[in-house]
Amino acid sequence: MYSPPRIRNRRHDCRAQVQSRLASVDPSLSLNQNLYLLLRQHFPADPDTAWLVLPDGRCLRYGDIDATTACYAGALHSLGIGHGDRVLAQIDKSPEALLLYLATLRLGAIYVPLNTAYTPTEVAYFLGDARPELFIARPDREATLSEAAQATATTLLTLDGSGQGSLRERVDQATPLEAVTTVSGDEIASIIYTSGTTGRSKGAMLSHNNLASNALTLRTLWGFVGSDVLLHALPIYHLHGLFVAVHCAMLRGIPMLFLPRFDPGQVLTHLRSATVMMGVPTFYTRLLQTEGFDRASCEHMRLFISGSAPLLAQTWQAFYQHTGHHILERYGMSEAGMIASNPLAGERLPGTVGFALPGITLRVCDNTHRPLPAGQTGVLEMRGPNVFQGYWQMPEKTASEFTNDGFFISGDLATLTEDGRVSIVGREKDLVISGGLNVYPKEIEEAIDALDGVNEAAVIGVPHADLGEGLVAVICVTPGSALDADSVIETLKASLAGFKVPRQIYSVDELPRNAMGKVQKNILRERYAETFCA
Ligand code: MLC
Image (cartoon, rainbow, N blue to C red; front, top):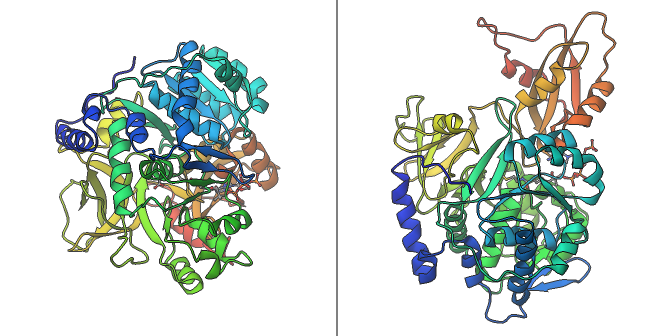
């Protein structure tokens, strides 16, 4: 069984706060802090209440979740999966994928979701790093991935987007496991992989309490009520779609209109039956371009929430002009869940992410971690029950991302007003956010540098009307090389997920460098700023 590392003493204060808060929700939670138990305690009294409504009309009900996840848990248990074991999943969005997640929680095991766009090469890395006991893949990937799974002695089962596959066969034959494994709030519920500045992905370990405290806060902060209906069009391999959206809905016992992906036409159809939607900024820019999307289509909507990438003030304004809705922008990251939010009732200001969530302390610091006066730009640091337990098997990396007094150093540059309103103004890390997905240029540069005929490469993010930022690679080819942009893109696609592959490639004789020899990416960003917006 895996025991999470203890990081900072001060964090025990946060833990105590969360524990007493959870115990006030239900006394049994002070003994067993399994997030599944907390969710179950909030299932609506009427078992017929819809949980997931699918575009084909299929409906799963709250009253069936417990018995069904018991079957999933029984199937996992029969494979030897238990407390602290990792369950890696690279599967399409489906109700069964969500049931698998809940059953993993229920068993006290650790759910590790992967972006469905990752290539087999990338998945092999995650298998080697997470060392899961079980890997659930799409059936069409089974043959390609079985060798990598064998190499890590991982059992490989399959699940497709319609809920079929060898996992399902196991579930159908399983003896239900009714128990909810007792865990302490510090134990890891999920590992979310984020790309790394060094090119190596890091697994952010989130505990049952990290997820529970964040979800309870958001449910109240965003005013969820029993009559709400959440339109769910986000992927469920990431924190936004899996935790923020699903937990808020389940802690209020409301239905989710569960769409397989973001398709503007389908969203438009279902908006008429929804009251709340969460999305990345690309959702909103695409909706604005969708014929028929107007004030009337948003008539029943109570709230549009945006996050995972900066929402341009012009998109916010255009959305308001078009629909009469002020999008509520919030700020978060894999390492800390949701951190700040514009208010539900107060003024929502475009270009700001609002105020620290209750229970979370934010400060903007200089590079010696001294808080700066209001209005000055520095690095945003945070402490609270939301902050993760560290990076999976990277204790040094974990230690370097915390200050001595227990604040997590976000790497985002921000300003704070006197009254605590946060604006994110830049990034300390070399990071690009494209369509709500993080990409660290270093990883892409290493892949390009490894190609025959490349001397060196720099990868940058530049404004992209649809994705927020689009990736551009600037490459110096070796003299006489016949390498062309199309072949670079094709080769990269074989090993990197599509969203990491640069959409435009420029060839140059040399990269601009400063006196220290460092590539001046700011110059490249200016030079190629118009690439996708001209
Ligand atoms: C897909 N593609 C992308 C991309 N998504 N390229 C760049 N950036 C992206 N985000 C590429 C594919 O590789 C493919 O390329 C082409 O676009 C079409 O693929 P698709 O799958 O049809 O794309 P589409 O459905 O249009 O998806 C775009 C999207 C999607 C923006 C709707 O990426 C999405 O749902 N993003 C949300 C991500 C998210 O949930 N982030 C939360 C992280 S949590 P080709 O060349 O093959 O045609 C987090 C913390 C927090 O950040 O605060 O929330």
